[in-house]
Image 1 (cartoon, rainbow, N blue to C red):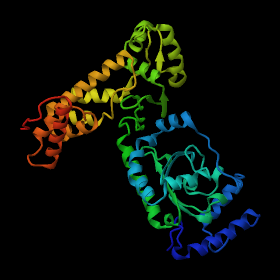
Image 2 (cartoon, rainbow, N blue to C red):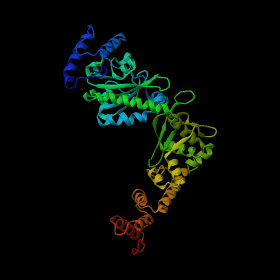
Image 3 (cartoon, rainbow, N blue to C red):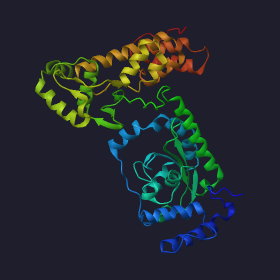
Image 4 (cartoon, one colour):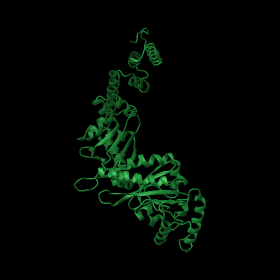
Length: 430
């Protein structure tokens, strides 16, 4: 017996798509939703769409954007399982040139991920994060119809109510709160004809069950309420870049060098600093607190309420790539520290505090690499940061296996540097 929630068809899909298209044209023209190729689940959905006055030539609206979207989905219960859904569906979608979409219980798309080219094509029909794809806004489609029915469903080609969507096929399954049974949203896979295979519906069903299982672990055992996802801390990236990057509220904000310097200084002084102290940390030419106030005004336009006054301080903790490297060094993880360090601290900055910390980080990381005696770490340091560092090349030549090509190269580089520095070249590496 044919499963009514599957598109079915196999090799007949092209012919069935044409017959369903004729039924759709007739329905839009005022005829009953009927025809030998038309599934009852689709006919009923068309009727609901018509009752909601959905324009078949229209498109769903985008109702969440920017910071509102980021804040809403960060607080949504499905944020707890987006990693599981990416692992089960996202990778399959990307490999198959499809999309994975996750919506809330109102049909608003919270995540749309997958093949880059497919995403660009989907943007033309507003299949984007923040758009409303419930049936009252988008007519018949897998996410919206799965929400309307409360069960998994597959929608094929011309079964879609909107003309712009009729080149696509999708399969979606609801994800429920394991404590209450309430629908939290849907997981959907969208793409071309290959999505019409029964495996697509099985995939989203399995992903929904896995997500519900994971949510069960995230449930408070006393109240049954899902624990909210932990907030994503603000983060400052200042290593190996001439400017700064602030990640806050789900946004990436590119900072000017001076604004990055201010945040870096404040992150090192959680109790705050005066205007004069901040000026001394930023300028070495006697520039006063008035200049600092100008820079802080510019910074607040970008970072909002992150910076407070009297004294100048951060309103909340600020992670940073610099702090990550320092933390790895403190726990003796030299490999982790080197891997976390893409380059020097704000290399173009001349702010006194930044210059001091840049030199100190370089000394600490270099010393840890030398002390490790690890050929791999010494080689990575030499290639990335120490091409002119004689001590590192000599140490590397001493620890590499004898008669190896790598050792010969390291020894040759050490001799080159000795010659550049006017030192004797006849040194044994042992």
